[in-house]
Amino acid sequence: MEQLSEKMSASAFAEPGVRLSINLRERCRMHDLNEALDDLRAVIPYAHGGSVRKLSKIATLLLAKNHIIMQAKAIEELTILVSQMKQKKKKSEENEEKSAADDS
Image (tube, rainbow, N blue to C red; front, side, top):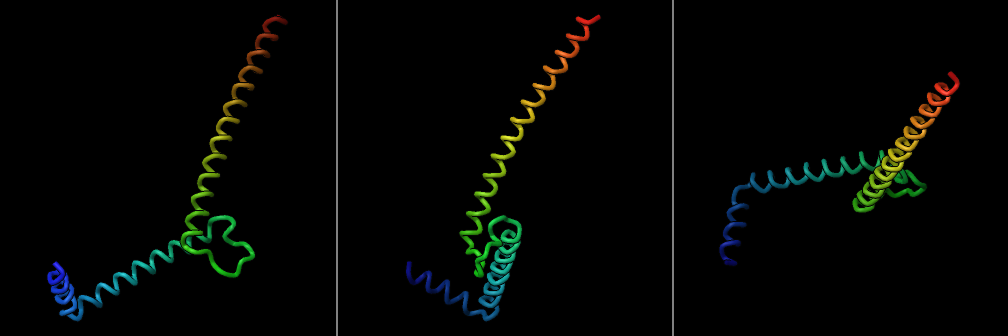
């Protein structure tokens, strides 16, 4: 088994362009990942604090996750509030119609 993996890795390095191609692809992948994380750092709150160092990858992802959770909770609370306000408005309109009908 060990000989097989040695042969496979040796054959992969036999062609000079293969390893260079793999390295280039990995560099591009890491560049894209780092660029995406920089874009994420730019839009999440708390990432622009007084710290001189940029946030680590894990800190960036955790902050983004927590921010998304907070936003989801805020949306849920606002949805409930809007629903309650609509119910109050409907009751108020019904009471106005009732009192207008009573006055007639």
